[in-house]
Image (cartoon, rainbow, N blue to C red; front, side, top):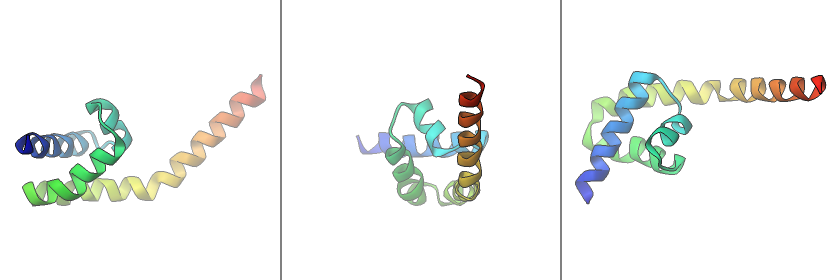
Length: 85
């Protein structure tokens, strides 16, 4: 069972890297929770594949920096839709 978790961590890392996606989208794609994705790419991936971990970490830091912008845009869309009704 232990090997499967490490494989998943590498798969998640590769998916995030190739698609430059968020933890939430990766979780949805793989059918696991956001907590699982975060733990896999932040702890397990660091042990299994440190180079991939560093690359994925960079993408996650960019996503974190942009998070407030995406949230603001989502709120704006929500209220624009309500105003049209």
